[in-house]
Length: 153
Image 1 (cartoon, rainbow, N blue to C red):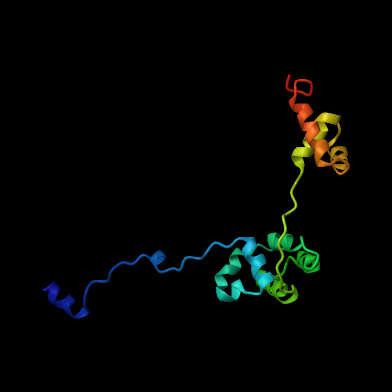
Image 2: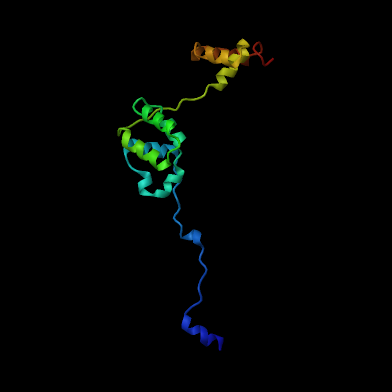
């Protein structure tokens, strides 16, 4: 009798996992956003969910490496409180289209530690001294410190 009552309602409802129907968001790096700003293809307009992946600090840091874009990056650093979409739109509109590739500035902590050990300087004094030494001097100091006289007896 219960089968006859359920006959008019059709087949039982299948349980479906919601995650199967959600589109996977491609993981974007700050470099993807920098390239999209430089080449003028709007990643956020393509998929509004990309806005959550936008990292203003890293994008501004990347654009701050170039003379053509340093002012725009600084302006966005000053206006950090703005919405990510607004910051991205400002950069899309104000940065001129073009190829911009460079190596990122790196930290010289290892060389500073070597200078501190060799000369017995403080961190600040060693950092100032690093500007006076060239790569050959640094390599000679490393070689000296790696020999038995220099420290690894």
